[in-house]
Image (cartoon, helix red, strand yellow):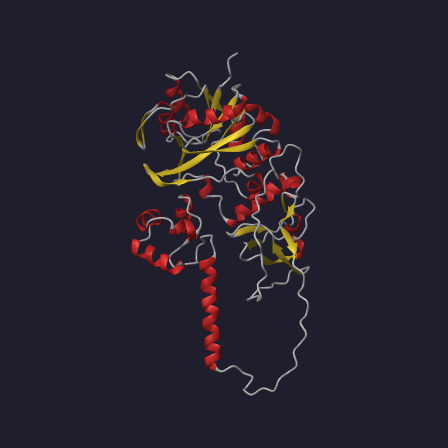
Length: 445
């Protein structure tokens, strides 16, 4: 009995006519913006392009390639309906056993499909994903964007799986398809969580097969502001309210292994400069119980305010209206598996006041003492920056938001990763001079 190893490549497309020749070159071989590339070692059974009502000559470009490749199909929406709808239309058009996706402006390395299908056949009740290499302006970038190993609990907090996954077609049917309400982005994140919620866990392929074009056309360059992040975060909590409240359905990939590191969180003997801003209904001090050393940002479902926490900075003051919500998206409603992500910090017991002792000096601090205190506070503030593992703009001189984005695209998101790279590589990635890179090294060490 023969094994059905058919797979379809779906391509949601909107005004991408100028990029499609690159995509087809990465499938069939030939000239591309990256030079001459080799064909795939294993071709898809079908390729379905879903044109989401483009205003350019997408259809003309596709038809030209269809002359020599009968496995290519072209589907067009009469109106623009968004990427998730285009994905669903393309999948509806094919009956192949497995599906893999590529966005219309991206490319694939020659062995990609063969390696992914091999992993898929070995893990038929899973989704398969590999690593990413960035390319822009006709050049592959040197660093590989390594995805995290699969962990459903971590996936609930951030999407570490790129859009170009492979999965069984039946899993798409069972989870209800790509979420068409996520028309403005993160449809891949929602889809990945949907698959995990019904037991289709991920298998991480250690191969950088997906070539991701990072130029001005990217939607992620337009919807990555804090306001958009807040919208996506709230939308995810609304769609998966039970899961975010810790109520995992039977067979769910969640809670199969712990995503929270077992870190001993010792209370600091002193609390420095905590900003307490009274909310309309008051404020409550919460302790973060997660295990992320980098800065995590959670948004209040009522106020929309961002609350930043990490293992090194676990205490935050939260507006009481953001503690709970009817849909289970309040900070005290959040769980990782069965573990609460935040707990109320108990008020410290008042210490008995010591008996006053006779003062031998003026109670007002001298200028020298004040100057010393200010120096210590400045030094502590600098240490706080250096000890933060997550790279953020404004921490170090010249490390702007644009530099942070360039480093992130190369997979460098922590200072530890920064220090592990050569100054010449960091200079090429960030656009900073090697002398400035060396100065930053000194500052953070």
